[in-house]
Image 1 (cartoon, rainbow over the protein chains, first blue to last red):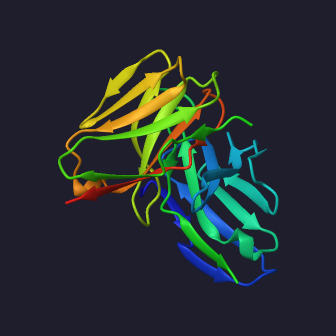
Image 2 (cartoon, chains in turn orange, purple):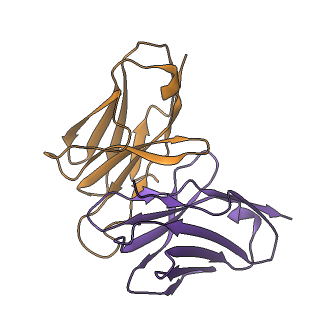
Length: 115
Length: 111
């Protein structure tokens, strides 16, 4: 979805490195989310933000941190990457009011490999 | 904790047949449900949604059925096409909480 962009799309890094994944959206949505996807485990929520001043932990926040720099930007950092953080990472956005307010729109994903 | 799950991890159907993908949810407070489609190498895409005050909702070739009594959700795809091959996820929310996703069902369409 071109309205939600993620950079980089692919990244290979080494254990112990600090990594930042970035997400930008042009949908004007207040709410943004970070998920990771592993085979057989579906999408698991890492962090979410309901507005610029709001940050909430999700199901699997350990080892991750986030920053909501602006309404349109939400970045995910791996403080010290480890191999079991190898996964596909998705950013998503949703609106707060109106029809379909709870529908989340996903970016194309970032494939992260930690060696 | 409460979660959304799926009965069948894989489903193979003949092209032209109808597909039914099932999902069980456990949070009785959930009042909004969505089906997503994820093609290889892409992010999940919205297909159809339904609120808890409805039993059925139809879209283009897709129908979602909600049975609140047994906490079951299904996605029906009519006249399945090769382009329908993907992983399908159900998701639920109480409205002010992030979506909770099931583990997904892979649909393979046999030409």
